[in-house]
Image (cartoon, rainbow, N blue to C red; front, top):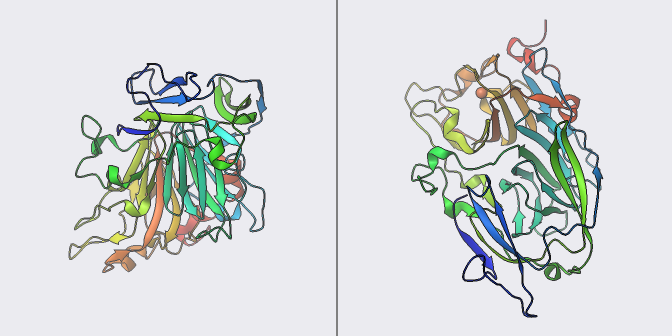
Length: 407
Ligand SMILES: [Fe+2]
């Protein structure tokens, strides 16, 4: 995000002496992408960022199964967690639904604080389906709620603290849809000026993005600044994704100030201004972010096609170059009527299979002026495989819904 922010205490000149009240130097860290050649921020630490006192393995199983024989699928994410499940957190409790070598999609219903965590593989984009959370990061704090995306850059140390029933305004447990990239996640390039400003034809602008509130220090949350703390780290080896737990001899909230263009930010889907037309608009108008080999789109409540002979639901389409994952977060989805798909469902429409409205949905949509739907879509340019959780909640019959059931 090439949009400069500064918070807390930073020296007037970069890479110069910056001292605290006791006269000691702060430790300057450059956190930068693409080897000093892309966006970066400078963080000023009270403790040495590289100081670790222990390391151990964090066992992770992110194995996947190929979508073979090739099938469109309906995965019922709300069946993954029991209504009375407790002690689940956003980091260690997220369950892998779909994934490939570029991106992983997981889902969690959480009520417990997560451990401190950072993803050493790529950026994360977490969509809050319901409920809310306080997210503490080394850059500062966010309060996120329904419809928020939180984009967290690779290597950002943070933790999730769900706001549970009884916290003001949050009556439901936190339901989070996690999109983990092996790359960076950013606004679509075509919406950015050559210097990175969001252009006039973009469906959102910098004013819609919320930065972290900071600086946030251990003592601000009643913690001991010198308390030894474990940080869970997800990273890669030649054998796949693994985890390590570091112990630091201090609390992670110790950055007194930072500035730059690399930081986490939040964006609410209600601030996405839909692009509409007289006839059906293709999915790229719904795009909100992109990563390497995938895009993220959202289908928001909107006025639909207004040509006198328009057909508001999509035409049948072949995803020649992609697998399409739609997460139905709210509202009614006109094109899927009669398929069993509802709130909390995922549809997977893989490349190699033409898909479109269920029987009757096209005719039923004619004359409709508005769609009350809210869905988050991930299109991947390499095939997706099923994670353990995805296979567990596959309804097993969606593939035959266009013929009214398997013969
Ligand atoms: Fe589609």
